[in-house]
Image (cartoon, rainbow, N blue to C red; front, top):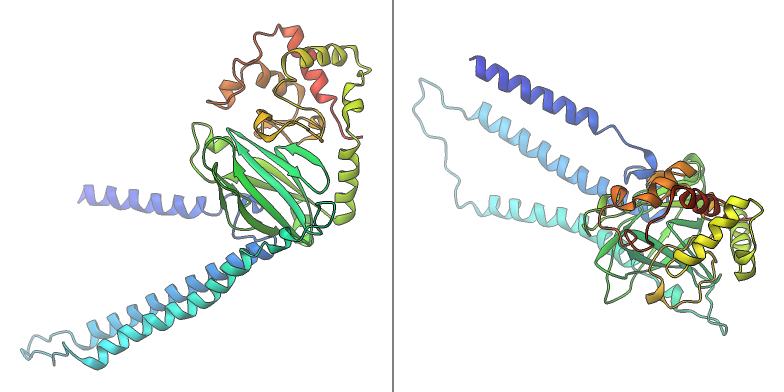
Length: 361
């Protein structure tokens, strides 16, 4: 008896804990608070399937209760109820009803699938090779993300900037192993493969973006290595005018601007260190002319204004120095560890000062 009571208490505690934890989280990292057309479509389909399942459970539970209460055997009645096995009517009923339910679920699902897969707008190119559609090329790497805007001639990393209230089309690909591109609040996930390019479109609702302070979170949704859970990126969903201002500012970060000496002596010394030890992998201009295969590390243009360091650490000089000193501690299996040799504390301070000075004017 005591053991049963202990098991019941454990079961109750586990259930209440699961219920409590299900309410935790942030709205910008949830599929249950859709922030755009694609996300809303998926959410509506989720609700439809849930209500169908709830309806089935209720009907079956009611029929079961009726059967138990109405047809239970009485002590003074040894008679056996009428047997209905082989009833063609019943067999047709419990065959046709599931088919109807599947049709109700299948029709909007198929329509939504074709709608969300419609990326033909990316194929309509003008004479200069650009498109009227907003296009972003996404390249997933161990363990970081690259975002290229072919129409705007901009390459950046770790932070995706998009306009609100219009469709944004994505070409997604991986450079090493399979990853999965996912912005929970915006819509469904899509695999990034090494051997082919997948395509998807998302739309960010302006009002929902404003409620989330114009910041959403993206994740890798495919187990890709020891730091899979740390392969995050941020999404800045901006009104069209602010997005255009960002584009103009990023385009102004050209080679000449990148070569300019910082006024801070520590940052100037850090620039020399960067050019010697980091420039072969990292770029600090948005128009990176190197071929895709040569972009082996995140583009650092505008690094000083980002939300996170390495996608996960607080954006400050102290955390940046921690990352430079020992990236393996924060992202096991990353490709940066051991590629630039040992740095003294002074060199680390100077390099951090330079990187934090890389801001969009």
